[in-house]
Amino acid sequence: MTNMDSISKPTDTLDVLDIAVDWLSQGRRAALATVTHTWGSAPRPVGSHLLIDDQGNFEGSVSGGCVEAAVITEALDVIEREAVAFVEFGVADETAWRVGLSCGGRIGVRIEPLSSPSLASAIEGLAAAQRERKAAAIISSVNGSSAQLVYSPSEASYPTIADELTKRFVSGKSGSVKTESGHEFFLTVRIPKPQLVVIGAVHITQALVPMVGATGFDMMVIDPRTAFATPERFPDTQLKAEWPEDVFKNLSLDPYCAVIALTHDPKIDDYALISALQSDCFYIGALGSRKTHASRCERLEKAGVTPKQLARIHAPIGVNIGAANPAEIAVSVLAEIILALRGPKPEPKRAEAP
Image (cartoon, rainbow, N blue to C red):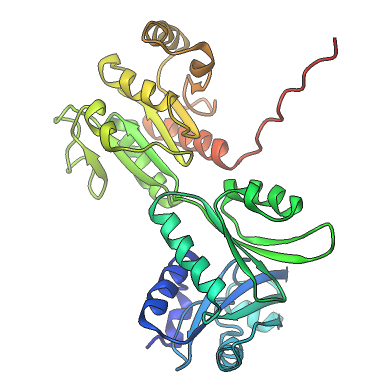
């Protein structure tokens, strides 16, 4: 049984949905509470979940401890009535201070029973999509009981929702949206965990490991040079002391993957870059000067890479911050990767009038 001590270390939002799948398989009667709105300072962000069963056991958090008891009480009633509830809570200034905020605010929480067939099916589908590294979202009526699982923005029923989903399939953030007719929906968005594939077990890569871990990315390091790719140099890291062509046979590069080549050795880097350019990965970068990159482009063109594909390579790699050592280069590289993933996307070019 979960106790109130778990509030100090809230379960990750996505983990809560995974737990919900387990509870469903066990036949437990339960409800899912979701933060759908916040005003002022809020202890937990929109999209945070609290899962409660009919015995009062719970996982997750919607407020860091401010209103959990009240939400649990409401959830027990929701489970009994098998009906959706929407409640708002004010977080007083003195309570806010206790959970690390400078001032209070209000939160809106939607509570829905897992006995809802559409919600149960959508949560299970969301979990399955995550295992397959696919983006997906549950579209729920804020004040109703409908829940639709979609795998692309085009599957949404309203253009407004589709436009909002397009943005959220990039950011991975959940949130609410109103349609042109005034109906309000909540979007529970789940995207694959970003993955960084690094070619080269070099000093820059060693500096990247703790930084990438702090951002929440998954990371894989590939280098056939066994003197470089050692567990001692890369503890607790997914390490492949193999040639990229062997690893890439079983590696799927999707739109949530970034690939960077850092060895300076064409025999190792080039195959990985060609494979990345043939995929939908969101970022491709390569270490080296402009002169080095020009030579690289000549080699890749001879291998059949098109000029349009070559333009996708970020080289020289990283944001220009005047980096002078491996750690600083690692900072610049990771900053550019995050910018490519989270930053504003360029507007599509419009055809000029004749």
